[in-house]
Length: 333
Image 1 (cartoon, rainbow, N blue to C red):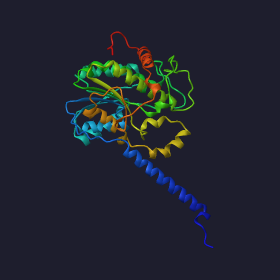
Image 2: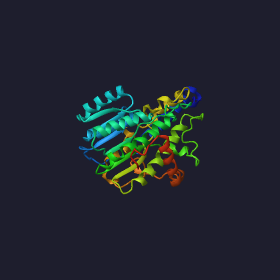
Image 3: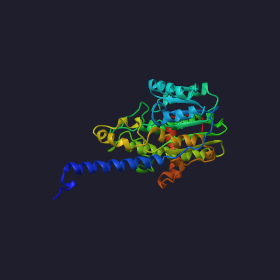
Image 4: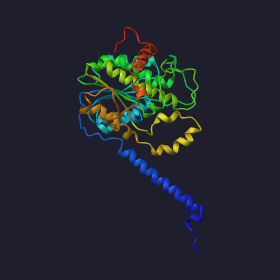
């Protein structure tokens, strides 16, 4: 009687590995075809775009695309060494010399103010502000010198402050756009009605993504409230989910979770694929009059009701003004 291929444990392992490889390949292709397409060939010459966190990942690919379209791109980065290398690469590839790097640490209120002051003194108008910089924090939350949870300061409070400080520059544009790179992981978080968790400096979170998820929830609430406050102006505000991307944002995932995390990164979208919806919202004329929406794969996507609580959005806004230390002398929105 001939032996079955299933009699050998090595054959079984080979088939299992092959099946997994086929599944992952199909899944990878699915991610590729659902990340959206940019059909606009819009030239961005004469437009000034700020991209935070532009030294790597999605931000770098966003800056690269816009540079090729002729935009003046301000790469706002914390790590100036990697920013300089990214700029040189983008300039060489795009042949666009109008690419500049500026230092900003989005987790520091003072750094955000210094960056805004520099922009106000060197630029006449800002056409697009892209809040791309983001971090995923480890198990133990860090607190900044401003008394803010580090990941929330970087992902939410810094952008909230910067938007206020630059809003008048955006209003000078014929069509100003504010774009917030959020995440579908907002679905696994919420803002408590008493706002007790919007800066949980004394909490020990059980999973490294919880603070990240919370920051993304707050970003969407901020975007919708911002859009309402900008009605009647020429400035729009939208947010997006770029997909799960293989970028440096996951560098803070602690051991031993990073051992499990590394192999599945192969299934993630590339930074270029992840940047498509950001670029779409930046260059596509069809979204000129769209504001307060959440995009995924270059399309408007519905979001859950919890994040659309208008009263809570207003409360979060006012509490955020206090936490980022806005004064009566700062621009109002």
